[in-house]
Length: 515
Picture (tube, one colour):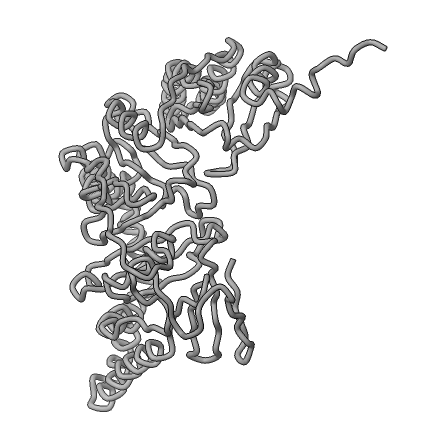
């Protein structure tokens, strides 16, 4: 939790700390005293403002007819941006005071954001391209209170040495001491070979990148078209021309589809370049990135399990991705990733060594669960095919027949899809860890420690009641908060919680002795 203090409010003191503005961390380095981000950031801020200033400045030049006065106004706009960056830098500071980090801003009104060190769940250090050139970094602090939204605190423009020092202090790897302690070298668990980056397009995460880029370009054209004399009339004219030349749209879509694996593969490689997982003094550290190098630290004692995820194409290739299940971690889908696409056997070996193995077997779900998956995969497309066939018979339009045939093919494809969905269902317990698995197009297997289970929840929809099956959710104080075993039988719904947490259910299941 963070706290903003109004100006003039007295700040509490920590009686456990010695008097004075600073004290020592475990490395014998002062952690107190007001500090500022590096002044080198002033070379970055104006550049980052250029995209928002470019079109207004171009507009000023156009309106002024590129006269001397228009250039003066444009120069004043640039100078104003630089002055704003200098003032923002001069009025920003941070300080570790006792057992908390305080981030102060006083650009317009003074505010103090307080982050208790005991609530820090993770610290990310990233180095975007311009920061890397200047030896700077961006440090982001997560306390788990943001719910995956904005970070609790961000220091943009600290030196690399200061970022590592702060990271050590905030993660409590440094303790108050009188003499420096020897640093323990990192234990590299795995460095993903670059040739495995070829698996990237199989995940599907980046396949739509070409369409996203094309959509962004179209949106930018509509947003800034007036600045270049391209108004709504020009847009309508372009649309009418494309409507009359549909083959151009078809060619564009085909080219974008062909580009999907190539562009998606490049984006995947950029984000996951030299992915390295290591142990560092009680933390699991994942480092990755080509242009923006990012380092994410997860406190090992808060890790409660892991999740293995694979899409259909990944399953055919025998590769999976892995995420950590951590207590109090915000934005776990981004910050919790332990491995990108790697061969399944290697992923299981690495994750089992870093967190712990699951030695049990997954138990199958009742046959009615297979029937439900078959029905849900086939029936919707079969119904659409019937409606399209009736429309084609009634109207005589050939397009309806084409669509009806496509729906029939999709319904036929639902047979193997439904069977795969059923095979993916499972749950198990090996005496130490609980595991549940479900999904087909995106199959996920969660493995959590028994001690992480904080409760059980039984759910049953109207259709499940008719089929006599349940959804059993293991409540976990980590990750997504709960992991579901879908369509279990009544016996499994009652027996599995009793097996995993018998001490919770025994008082309710024991029959009292007769009077």
